[in-house]
Length: 115
Ligand SMILES: C[S@@+](CC[C@H](N)C(=O)[O-])C[C@H]1O[C@@H](n2cnc3c(N)ncnc32)[C@H](O)[C@@H]1O
Image (cartoon, rainbow, N blue to C red; front, top):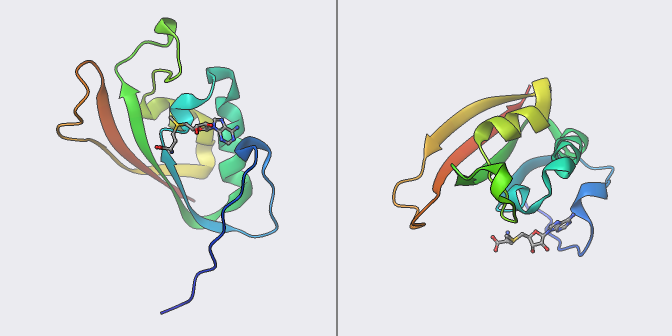
């Protein structure tokens, strides 16, 4: 087993820079909290931090909610993540989450690998 250093930072994630490369970004309703204009900055973050073969995994929520109806949470589809991450990332999983529990919106699980 390889020891993994862990830390917690209070910071603006979108402007976070680090010399290290990371294996995983887990987006648990962070992307949908961002104003849609800030979504490209999420892609920039992923390209800065995730090395080749690393993952961006996301709870895609609220799926099926129109952007016009405002936020946060802003409506989110896997395609929005695909657009933000750009061609450096390839979708490897994109599936609905059963019984997400929300009466109006759906939830998906999406994973992208850095190519
Ligand atoms: C819907 S909450 C999700 C929190 C947590 N992931 C969870 O599932 O309980 C969205 C979070 O994103 C944070 N957030 C929004 N923009 C941010 C930014 N630029 N940098 C760091 N955190 C941010 C908000 O403060 C909020 O805590």
